[in-house]
Image 1: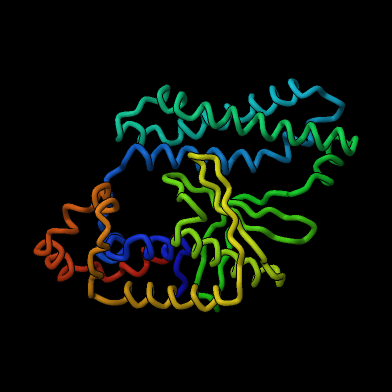
Image 2: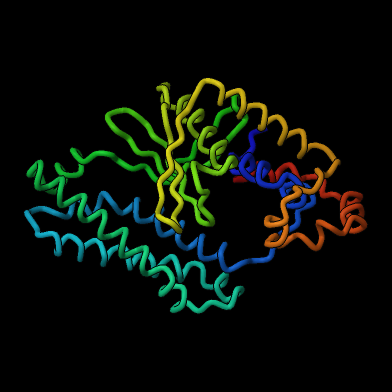
Length: 291
């Protein structure tokens, strides 16, 4: 079987919660932070998909303001569509579409200004336009790359892969709290797993990756080393063993995680958990294989 890479991160964050979700098939109630995070994530994914069209449409020298206006127009269109796609989820957490737009507007403006400035600078340095501008522009960004491996027993979708002259660098976009230094351990394993999948797919060494914390606009570097492969494989085996078993992991002993968890009521009700284990859905492993 192949499991989703995201399960490795979930396992390290709280293995008990992962068991509740993937073995006992419980669903966490929607939360504002998760819904807004999904909107931001979807917006970024679609921004990268539109990048080639935006860049190739610049066929002559434009001033910075004109390029910023072009980016802003396209990005806001993408944001509005992402909000509309998540209307039902927004209703579920009592957020209007207008409120979601206002909350998301600042990061879209900053992102569009940054990308426009980068393109403007590249044009000034290279004096190329249209399709040639796109072909020469580095890095190229592949969004939502689906990738899997029988050997690694993993599959998943990488948020972004930046390609520099046949060098591949994975990027993961994350919402939520940013660590004071480096990346969260669960995110480190996730980006390491994606590096192994990329290395197998393209038969090239992957030297580094990045985790981008969207809420604080920080990009954190992760250097890869030979020991990471064994570390990832060990966690994969642990996750599969947990999913195939009937023994629920212990509590995570982190009050902050428990306080904001939508499954805490069931999690701490040992009688209910015991009853759920007795009627465990036989095909729970199938749900675990889905990203």
